[in-house]
Image 1 (cartoon, rainbow, N blue to C red):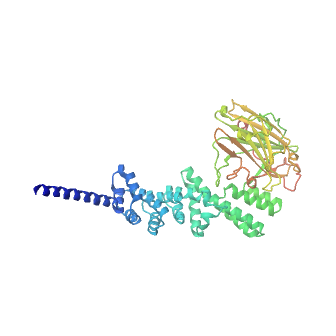
Image 2 (image 1 turned 120 degrees about the vertical axis):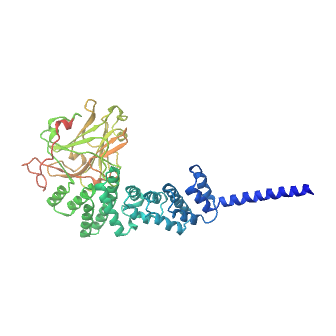
Length: 488
């Protein structure tokens, strides 16, 4: 009998232990317990807790919302929980999660607001909170919001998508904060991001202006262009679009005056003598040429971003011929890519200079000439590689000067019924490909694409003071000259 009593007691103890283990295990899987462990537990068990939360049954969203509302939770754990809540919201559209995360976008802790701004981009949820995040007092929160706003998907058709869904009042707030950031931020990346937000709106207004002009709504077009220039008077696209509008709709002298006023006109001087096209642009006549400033990265979509490498372009004309010299500086000229040697081979895959012309200023036809560091040339017209134009060119490498140079000369008639005469007006741009440095840059920014000829600057072949012009534009003075040292 005693034996049975002992056996029964053992069985009861085992059963109790089994039930206890089950109850403890069940309790450990409860969402509120897992949230407590996530918020207050050891760092070593965080990953295990996250995995258990993904498998937990019960009211997980409710436990998450309650946990985020606690004021005694360490900042880093609240950030982790906010991330998990976005993940949960992406799987199950629980309005409690959405409401709590909207409140988190205005949380007193900037770390939480930063995480919300980051997750809005990652999960593409709660995007209507972007205006508040983009106007946040915390620079890092604004950075995350700007990165979302300047993504291509947020600006479908240059002004659609997410941006279009923002109310006019919120849009104005975002643009005002972006302008302030672009002007005053001590962080160069933040200034670029602020300028990019402005640049998106400027391009949208530019597209609207073109569409309005096509419908004959000139007042509407003028208003859009004026608004674009007001947003950022230094924006290259805003200045150029206004200058091109004036050229298409105003008497030429007025259009040129507007282009000069907004610095959207490059005036190419008449050279005192024709330079020898020998690849060494140190002749005295080049000192009278137009000299470019720093080049800009062509891949910067919404704002003009200076290139890392140094490039200088010189432009002049004489006796119906356009002359261009480009100096490409490199710390190590031995790294130049110089694989192609044949005419019309893939020279753009090497370190090269690209000259793109739109002599009729149509914004559609593009004449492209590419010359690499081997002095091999390629040319095409609007994608037609079968055409060949007549021009002179010479590229040379100067290790003692730290640059390679390319000289180019071409009659205007080489492109068809065009001329290079004092008073003639073209559109053109100069590009440089730096293969080893993975950089493509331009004399005038083209906002994401080298073939955007509608954004090439206007160039006026200026006469020598006192000499008559071939067109109706007034005579203009040559641009400032580079020094001999700069030419080298």
